[in-house]
Length: 438
Image 1 (tube, rainbow, N blue to C red):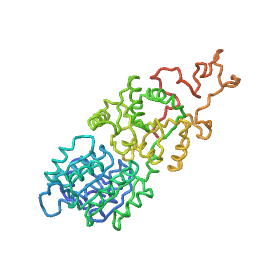
Image 2: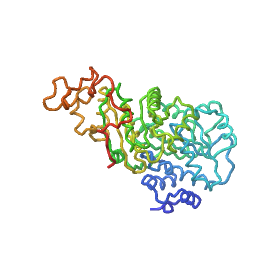
Image 3: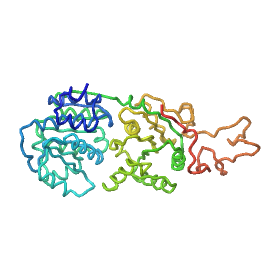
Image 4: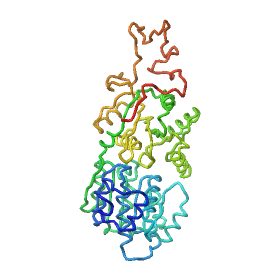
């Protein structure tokens, strides 16, 4: 199958050729034909599978085929809602690239930056508006945007919209849309809340699915390290002593946690930058650009970025903390398996995160193995790696080596049961993590 075989026009085919896109991905092959036919659609696909083109190309073709008219001020003809600034910016870039030979205008609006340039773009008239829900709602309340001319509506990353608490903003926007429109909903998962949202949003939708989560997960080598919470930062530094970890995303559960981890890495001489909701847009753009260019080796992120980062050749994902929602684990580790590639994911698991680990294994239908080999159930109940013993070693868990005795951690030794991190150079890799891509 080629893009020409999907029924796209010459202008779009030239733009695709310029980007060296010759063969449609599975989600594009399944979604583009019904979208071109004007059908409402539910698309299930991970980021990195080409789903942006799956809705951008049909929308651009439909808008360009409509009777030529100058866009009305403040009234876009197509609206795409995305959960994060980064994803909105990437979608906007795709519309710009694919529509380069079409007489269509687009703009992207999101919070964290001044709204005046965004409002000015809307006043000049645009065809495609890509927006995050919060900033769009603000502009609608100020009467700086109207949605009465929208003929095409896309809700991207619908499950993430729900996770981030945007459901009420989304419903507010949907109520302002014309009843006669084409609606496309894309989501990586389909929980009950998204199903209910789709029922109120779509009319007799076509449902297409590509690269289910489990397939993506199967392409990633996954390992866990049982580490006390107090030891995680030191363990992360030692892991990064592995030269094969060339471009790494580290996920934390909180914004403050991301900042603390970044500061710890920088003190250890590791180029790192943080990206989360409290960062200004300029800081987020700078961090992503540094990461893409290789100036920044480690990007520390919260889940707000789990689906908004599209960077090639990410060698590793490290879950500094497990997410409390198993779907987020799949999205996180998928950053290192872009477009069908393989990757490596390492999770640092504290005893308090055992329940999260079980939920992840249930969702992925896969038993995650500790880095040292052996099933997770073999680990102590508190979730820590037990001190190893040699035959004849002392009862307190210490062991004899070459005639001298190592002290327990409480006495200043280097057991892995708790207390201060082991006495070893910060740059030395943790040997059990000498993993290789499958």
